[in-house]
Amino acid sequence: MSKDTLLSKIAFLCDQIDEYFDLDLSSAHEKYQLQNRGNSTVLINAAAIAKEKRVKWLRGIHVSYDAAERQFFRCWDLLQNNPELDICLVKDSLGNARLFQIHKLGSQLECVCLTQNELGCLRNGYTGFLTALEKRRIAPESFENFVLWQDTLASGGVEYTEQIPRLFWNKTGYRLEEHCYRVASANAKRLKNFAVYCKFFTRRGFCSNTRCQFVHDPRTISVCQDFYTSGSCPFGDKCRLSHSEPGTENTVPHCKEFLEGRCKYDVGLEGGSACCRFLHSTHVKRDYPICRLFAFSGFCYRGAHCPFRHLWECPDFSNSGVCFLELCRYEHTQRASYLTPLLRIDAREYLLPHLTAGKSHEGSWYGLRTKQQSIDVKSRMSNSTTSPLEKESSHVVLPVENSSDEQDSGSETETDFDEFSDNELDADFIKI
Image (cartoon, rainbow, N blue to C red; front, side):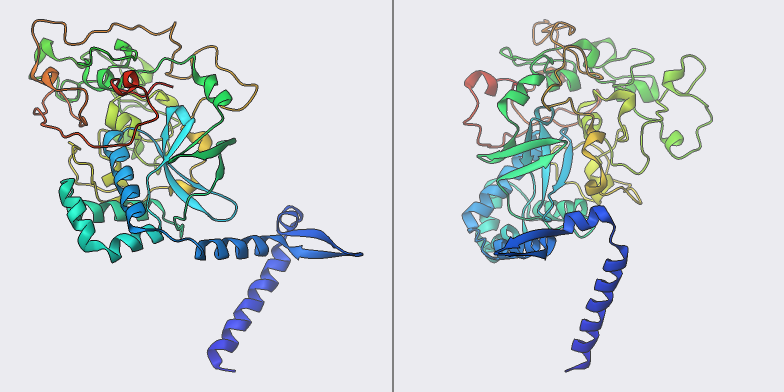
């Protein structure tokens, strides 16, 4: 027996001994089970058996290049078209992990990551993949940034694995249908009372889609960053964004100096007069990622209760040091020194409406309102005087900007939305 083999066996025995003495009653129930075998009962290591089955399952997975390419472009389209949606990392009891984009208030999860098998297929067929990227006008560097981004979010030794038929997250069971995971339709109907806000109206103060099906509530319009930070705006009274003072907890960012423990004011926006103009939230966690809802739409329904940081900064660059969003208008200068890994962020932190049986929503939920409570002004391209921002179509991917941003040319991306009706495709949000 070689020296390395002997040392390996000794290390394994030491781990077994440590595990034996550290094992408590609840852990023993999870790891071991009694199993009847004929006339006798034996004690089996259920966890080890489940791990062995998973390894065997993973070895049997075969991914084609075409499937891997489709998966990447689907992830790309989802992230480019919906940068404001929250991202979560879900890991089941067997260690299968996937990165998801949270749609429709948690009733739908869309996978936005590539597995090692899929990445391997794209690397092996890289010449053809470069041609496919060129057709979509995606730079190879952007693909590499995407890979780095997903690897950074999987910090802590998590490895993305293939999709599994079912998953359980936020105390809710999800079932794989087509390309995404959905909750049972009966549970999704619990969200039907909430108004679905138009994200273009929220972020730009107007919506040019004459057939938009969604609510245009002026209380959701984002704050004009130029006016709020400098007191002036090049568009003046013609600016569609909010110039109101002092703003609301849903649209005003957190105070960076307060997060760093050096704000000269004791209270923030929530304290009334003689206070900091920004929000001093006691619920925000300083080592959590930047809130995507706030950063990319200017409105977060969680408001002061949101544990994610409300800052006018790029969440992706802050988290991973790279940004592959084609129309991101934030400066990419500073990356956070440390952020809590997504895997350690509990599903309850997202403050999603309840989807479990027996819990319906008759009233509001934080900043979400029912259709009856909402104000729908339906103000779109009806005024005779229009600003340059209003001339853009609501059907292109729109960037994050304030009133001083230049007009964007934009480019449409292709996504498979066969499941939705024509009316829904004309809208800015897919209706719940």
